[in-house]
Length: 198
Length: 198
Image (cartoon, rainbow over all chains, first blue to last red; front, side, top):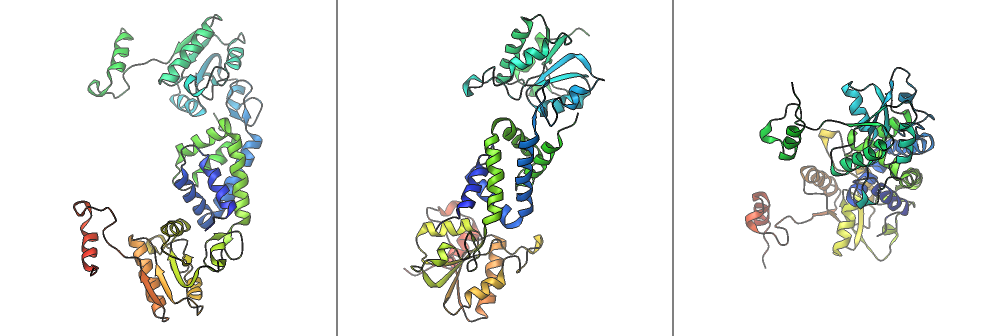
């Protein structure tokens, strides 16, 4: 019994989506062809459209359809502060806090030597050019607090401090609403070392 | 801060895949655009290709690129037996057992009144036409042993028996390798009622 070749090809393509295994890919293919051909056509077109129009902002490296994204074009923002994040979704989270009015640089990744991701893959040259434009005075590192994120922050910090920039990092400590009993010892240790006079 | 519109459209399209929520869709979109544009192009094309070429077999209703699928064209098979399954993957599972040499009818679904899926949605008219072609003498119902699958089997059974066909159902009982201690009471009850003289 043979599966039609274009169905096999479709299943294989769906498997290339992150986190999708063979069974899920097959279920998706059947679902699309049997129950939701509109969604399939829609997805085919929006993939082609996005590939065609989405590029990286010349300044902050995030996804945009223009040469420079709208955030970077915003004259209301503080051009002396630059916040470095790993991904556009991290940028969205920081925007939601309303605590940062400067500009961003989106690495689109993190250093991860084990996966072969080095400084070039996270666009470090572009970040250095951006941060040393003469206007930026402080770089806030807001990479994740994972091992890779911390290593990335450390690497960028050393690189930029060597060029005379002020570099800061988001504070570590006990999360808002956190109960000490349920917070890990590493976090409490860091909160103790970084304690602030009130 | 605005997300580029073609990126939003892509994320929305990915959300229409079964089992994909907003966070996963966003992660997939970022991954495709940043790390695997080849996979995105590939998926776009294979979706378009599949939509263009995949249709339903005129006889067994499964996915095929021809008018009649290869299985139905196979003259080596027993044309007097027809096995009714819910999906092409169920058909693959039965083929793997090498215990059935007849032909198939793929419902592409199951009766589910709560979801508004009635006899028309599972192509019952087509099944009746197929089963009453004068060659088929036995219909083996191999829908799933879920509530919907059982209801579907019952409905098809009544419909086809009224037309004078012999209708059978896969046996229920204790699975191979099953330990009675860990098998549910319903299964043991069924195995007891259906016990066979040895």
